[in-house]
Length: 220
Figure 1: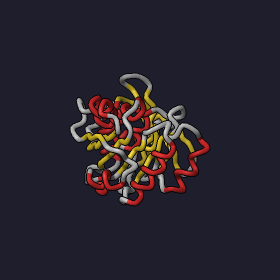
Figure 2 (figure 1 turned 90 degrees about the vertical axis):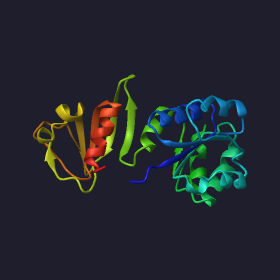
Figure 3 (figure 1 turned 45 degrees about the horizontal axis):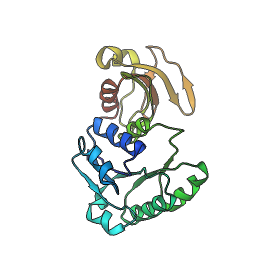
């Protein structure tokens, strides 16, 4: 499976946090900002970063944005720049574009322009965003503390149905399945309950253990 490539545009507090968490997940990242100071701050943990004005389509093209899978526009406090950047990314063929906005009234504007996701920092943290977009099968992410998280994972279509007991999730993966969502119904499972393809699992555990379990149920 091809490793997804990400771009973080705007490296203020929110963009920095997204970039940092993506880097913690060993993602392939391009980070840009107009500010040399902001770029220098992420250069310590991201190799591919540049000073760039994202409102200039040619500059984005020169940096290789045509090959980016998912771009996060984290500019903030500059609606015009965010709009122009969204238009440029769409024109360059970036498939997934998540835009940070400071007011919910702008959500529909960015969706109309081609954004596939709109996030308001007060509604979802940068860490949550980074962990959701790193995997196509992780639908939601909630950090409990520095060690443990609760994550929604979609089970792959090719998964062979097995009971939680037979999977031995606690023994093999050190995680617990605390909920199953199936066809809009929610189940608090016991060890005898069966996990099937396309189920959505509510899982609690440490990040690295959850990632291993996610890879298992999605055949990676």
